[in-house]
Image 1 (cartoon, rainbow, N blue to C red):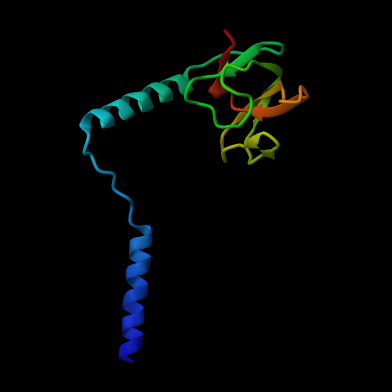
Image 2 (cartoon, rainbow, N blue to C red):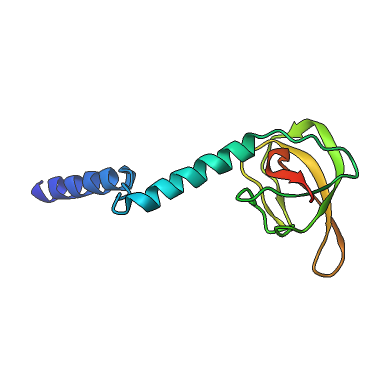
Length: 130
């Protein structure tokens, strides 16, 4: 009976520890302030609205690349702007989208082998190619 109690306590402690949030230290306040500043700027940039049309050249906004391709500063061409965004998990050759992110742009780009690839992306992560 005592053995069962010990196992039960051990199991409860494991479960408790597994779900406790990890607390980050604030040792370097300047690094923390820099992180927060970057986080706010990237979030602001993410929410900045850009309007695209078929044929426009686009590129990733800085800090918002969540796929392997295209690379930063590599232009992609808008193939289609979806009226109804795709809101599902898509697994393709160039990466995996985030769940519940609205994918509203079909973009084309050239692979390493100069093969034309098309994939779907969130419009919020792109800006006009400069």
